[in-house]
Image 1 (cartoon, helix red, strand yellow):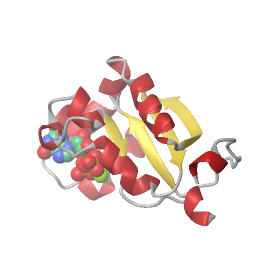
Image 2 (image 1 turned 60 degrees about the horizontal axis):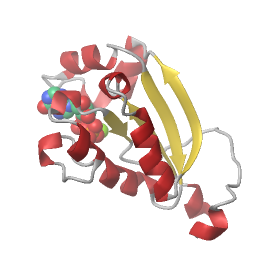
Image 3 (image 1 turned 90 degrees about the vertical axis):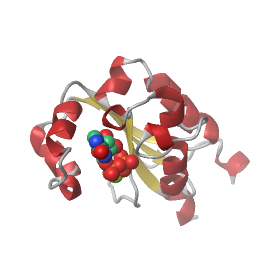
Image 4 (image 1 turned 120 degrees about the horizontal axis):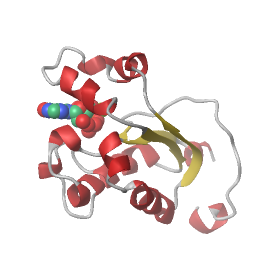
Length: 141
Ligand code: IDP
Ligand code: MG
């Protein structure tokens, strides 16, 4: 059942934290059926953010992105479940909230690409996090 153990990194960005959208994001992933396996509130360092967004370092908006992401704490989470990377991205919506459909997180809670409240991995992550069996597993799979 390795496919049920797929994991994705989801982070509520500083604007999402300040605007009180943490609970809403958790609620959506939780009620969908995904399993929370790690969560931490953290004020990300410049080093960590540079590493995280390394592929974007030559883009013109990179300095704005660094300033935005270090403007306050983020809530970093790891969610687990079948297809969670792809489904998580669908739940988030498009990078630009203006292109995101209603019903998606970015479609429902934000307006501007430079303040799009949430991050989600676009590929499967490797990790060394806790493993537990959710009592809901047999009702979901
Ligand atoms: P993603 O977050 O949907 O994966 P990426 O292309 O990986 O999108 O970009 C990372 C983050 O950089 C976006 O979520 C957004 O916060 C910011 N960003 C992307 N494009 C722009 C832009 O054109 N202007 C300002 N910020 C941007
Ligand atoms: Mg990305």
